[in-house]
Image (cartoon, rainbow over the protein chains, first blue to last red):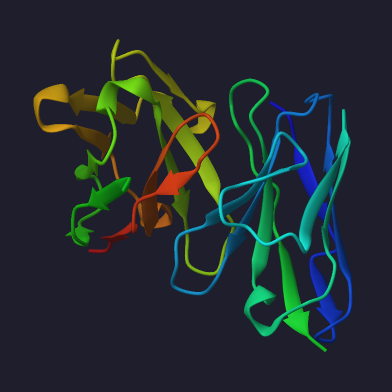
Length: 107
Length: 115
């Protein structure tokens, strides 16, 4: 089983600033990596797939990068609606494990 | 538009089973896998398994092997996840999600296991 590790667990950033979230896989997942955003009481929402492709309707301030075992989600200029929990998940093989999440909070 | 609509909240006793449904609309049901993911209160997302609605083939996380069964009824575009031998640690919101990349999610079903 591939273990996905996200860092940091909590990230405090001011609105308008940049946020950088990290995800590491215990073995290579190629570019088979997705990012999800989850707000309280809601189902997760797909942001990024293929490590760097934005899902339909996702604003350009969200970008993903990386391949193999190291991945990054960057939010270029934080808006109030971006404060949420973010999860990475690989889909390279089964089981399709998630990271433990990064909570992005307002500083 | 693509929608996944799940069944309502359930309360079960330890040792019982629960069956959650996920009705798909807005696309061809047999064209995309259905995955099941759960989330305990205040915790992260946990992938449980997948099902191919066309073939019925399934794959389960080892943690749930022997306790989970994923099935479907293609005539009504509905997927099911049944979890047996419930224990308190199974209290969680259970989600269905479409595809290998989880692009569409159901609204979630709260399953509470309590005596």
